[in-house]
Length: 282
Ligand code: ATP
Ligand code: MG
Image 1 (cartoon, rainbow, N blue to C red):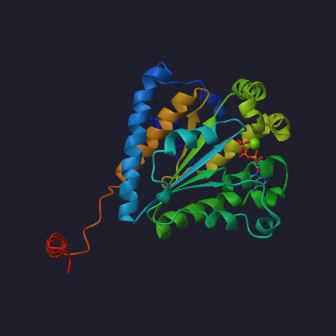
Image 2 (image 1 turned 90 degrees about the horizontal axis):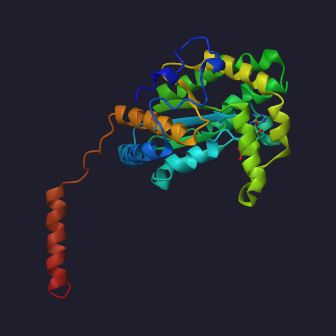
């Protein structure tokens, strides 16, 4: 799969209208894609085992979307095969008074992945140039400087923390969002997901599009690229993201670390202990 068309080149102009949220590439159906998604998920789990064992590099995955964009589903479908010991999901909601009393990156930096780990951000520091901008929660003078601050922060994570960063914008259409809200209304098991703000935020769609476009333009870098993922079809979203994550992990040249002990010596000790056990203990 050539996913490069979903990647935003550094400095490129972005028009979300140029990306079809219903795109499924050459793929025709969920049925056809499922074995591939499963294969990617298995390879991701294998690579994560090596990342953890190797303990030298980290991976940060940023998920951003409008409400009902599919962040939760993506996390559930793609990352449940990984060893929970080395994976963290960090959700960023409205800042608490304590968080609010710090700079906007304070709470984010604390959740950055340590070496050997994968961290998934369900929303992220990008809210501070998206919702914050759309609702004028801080003056333009403040949010407009945050693009540079974000780039410097992500650069720091990469250079000093060995963190690879992948950022996914889950692109859905307003019609698809409405259909998903309807499902949440109709299905008692999903009622809990509905919030008042979903409908009010929907009214700001054009403002969000503009804010996203400028964000993607200003913060897609070689080290921390943005991808616009067609997400009206959940299976295609899963297929593309899993492929990008697999390719990135496999490119990181992860390997099992060398043994820290003399295996022959340990084996000899083991056999001696086993002998003693057999002969009724020591
Ligand atoms: P779901 O998809 O399940 O609804 P969610 O991520 O939308 O999950 P909510 O609790 O519904 O979770 O909403 C969290 C809200 O917090 C979002 O509306 C988001 O825009 C807002 N938020 C996140 N970070 C900030 C921030 N820095 N400043 C202001 N609002 C923020
Ligand atoms: Mg919500």
